[in-house]
Length: 69
Image (tube, rainbow, N blue to C red; front, side, top):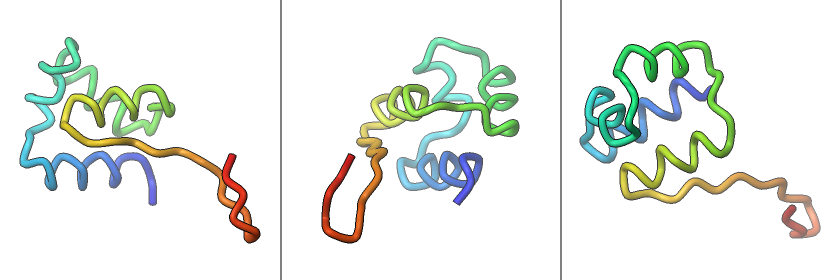
C-alpha cells in the first residue's frame, strides 16, 4: 500500500480531515497535502501523524522465523 492511501485510510478511520491533521501537526493543509501526494513522508513523519490522530505507527521488518527488526 502506498503512503498516500495509507494516510487517507487512517484519517478516515480516525474521522479527521486532512486540514485538521495539518492543524494538529502545526503545518498548512496545502503543505501537508503536497507531501502526502508526493509520498515523501518518512517513518518519523508517519509516527507524528499517528500520534496526532490517536494511533500507533509500527514500521519493521518481519522475517519468516519471527525475527523483527
